[in-house]
Image 1 (tube, helix red, strand yellow):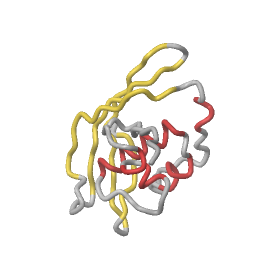
Image 2 (cartoon, one colour):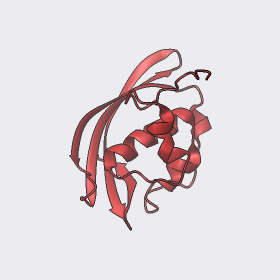
Image 3 (cartoon, one colour):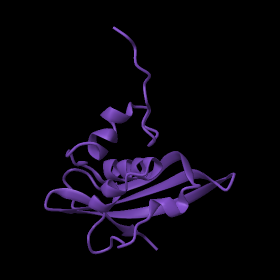
Image 4 (cartoon, helix red, strand yellow):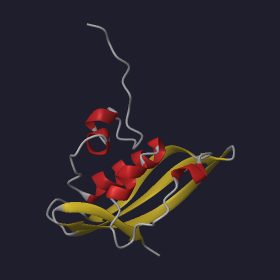
Length: 131
């Protein structure tokens, strides 16, 4: 049997993509925690899966003109989860704080965000970044 090259997930879990965020992005399976949704959305940004980002963005806050190619020069490098507040399978809301490292215009940059998530009809959605 031939070995295939492992493709690790962009979210930094050190798991293969198909068994990590790929199971959500590439199938109809839905994340069961706010952290899973945040990680899969990071991976979707890194891999430019616009449809997944729109599908997992709460309809009340989703922008009409989400264009991933306006930032085509950005390469997402690393994700670090800093803090998680609620967001378990039993919760209805959650907050995930993270730092994402990207390369833009030849320079490494970091962004930190506290993302709010809400569960609606049994599914987690990204609501907004806390201000």
